[in-house]
Image (cartoon, rainbow, N blue to C red; front, side):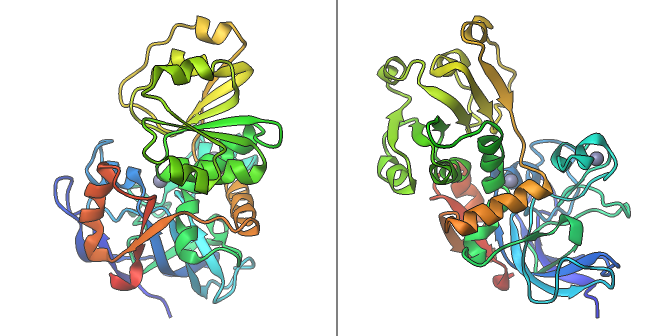
Length: 348
Ligand SMILES: [Zn+2]
Ligand SMILES: [Zn+2]
């Protein structure tokens, strides 16, 4: 039995609020799994895309790329999953599978035809619809296993926020003896603190104010500094092996690079809309790296989920009903969430 039409919350156009509707799902193919979605996280990029902030949005748009649920049906050729398994889906649901990056397990950097979980065209040429929905059909090779040890609700945000921070922390070797700073304590940053702490690094939060200091310490931060205080930049000069910036506000990159040790890196996972200018001496004097990083590949995302389950790490969440999505969007824009909204899809 296949489900062909499912309930969902969609933005009918760029300026309109999200509303309940139905969208088609493809029949379950040989290598597909049908997932009964239980929870879907709200990522800031859902809002950008639903409101056409990045241009060329496909409408109606069903956002959602932090998906957790249970396998409801599998295709004849599926070997990795069975009915009832706890599974997740992240930011992409297919890739070219042939380019050098796909072959290395870096599908997030696919140079061919990648397929995003929503606001994208699938290999069948049809639009993809995301996780604000009751069911989704995904190729088993792009489906993740969510181990016991983390609830499905708090696991959902790991599929974007979790991997977005885990990947650069792993790539730049955050661990014992390393000093790591996380800039911004929001949906992304709070996962960065938890994961960096669990990896064994000494973790500092660099936040605009000390308002979230208590939270930061609870999440695993060893230190907490306000970036609005110029003294922070004096006290912490040359301190960090790795700084990960999760903020999209334009930073004074020279100032932040001055906090990086020789051979250290400042990695951006949030991006300001405007181009930046930088005095390159802030890199040259100390062989420093200014870098970016985007989510993670399938194997690394699985490794992240296994790591988080082992350490009992989920996101800090506020579960909402589907009819609260529009209100939640406003609250995300106003940074009024600690730290991730997750939609209970049974309310769609
Ligand atoms: Zn996201
Ligand atoms: Zn590829």
